[in-house]
Length: 91
Image (cartoon, rainbow, N blue to C red):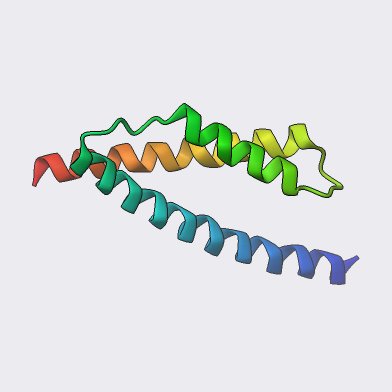
């Protein structure tokens, strides 16, 4: 069991790195959206992301689980985009 737990710990660290890398990309997209006068919330794009990840999923998580996980990831990225946009307005 300890080997499996160590493996989970390793994967968790990789996920943290990837989540942060993804968020850096979202922040940059937020800067571009601001320069172009676009809204941060883009339901069409979010639908594309969800469709992409659920299609790529081969389990054991089902499509609904993947959808819920990525909805949360997207929500957090959007929150950070807004925070960054507000910081830019203060400068």
